[in-house]
Amino acid sequence: MSGNVEDDKQKLREEVIKHLSSEIASEVQYIASLRSRLMFTVLTGPFIVVGSVLVALRGPLVFTESHTKLIRWGIAGAFASYLGLAAYGALLDNHHTQLCNKWRRGIASLLQGKDPDEDTLKVKNHVWWGYMGGFALMIAAFVSLVILIMQLVPTPHGE
Image (cartoon, rainbow, N blue to C red):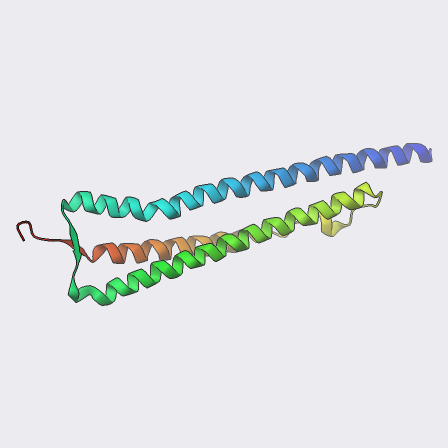
């Protein structure tokens, strides 16, 4: 009878290891996909907007002297937002790394024949605050760039 119980425990351990391994693979794939999508948008978005403005205004652009303060605020806001997005990305990567490391420790304990503890299997959910922070930074970057782009005016043709 005890041999049967040990066999059942071993099968359960193997299933938990398979599940945790697939969770690690899913997390790695998710973070790579998210990073690619976000960075493409963040890095190419301003160039697409500025290019569209250049095409729409059909001419070279100059910054007006009367709006120098708004231009500085727009540049400072965009710079701060992009630095915030970099920090946000680092925090996101760190969270997923810690989560995968926790699961790896659980796999190691299962391989040693120990029973997993609840902390190894339980995941704390901070998704709402994480997304709100990330989207707030993206909105701040967008608004800063809109303020900056609104200060651009075409030079008169013939000058």
